[in-house]
Length: 147
Image 1 (cartoon, helix red, strand yellow):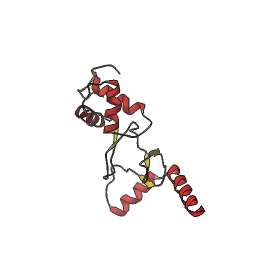
Image 2 (cartoon, helix red, strand yellow):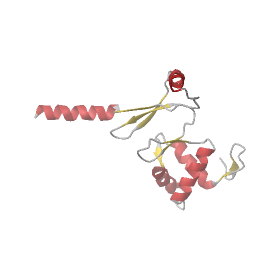
Image 3 (tube, helix red, strand yellow):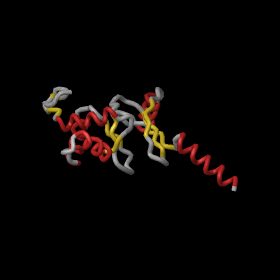
Image 4 (cartoon, rainbow, N blue to C red):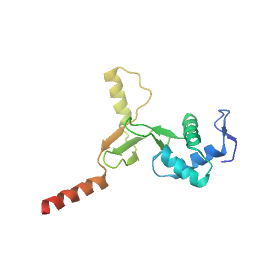
């Protein structure tokens, strides 16, 4: 990407600051919070302010270049993958993983029939305990039982 590039005919430029924020999101395998993006972006461009990162994320979301994920109980996270997909959220450590469930479309049709809503989209988030936290809990339980 080059500085000042216009995004998808929107008439607004992808400024150097926005490029840095987009780069951080795209290069991360994780779903980062704005604070995490800010910390990583500052390593690339130390003059960036938190407000610039936040405003850049809003712009990039509106341009369809990143996806904002909110759960209502904490900071939003940002996803480099904007195509429809599902998530699994660990309720212990906060790990957020992408997965694709082919049956989500059928689930949306069923929910639409039952609710009589005209669906525009569906975002499925499986909430539970990830394999790492589950294994750690099992180890703790075994240790307690051995005492």
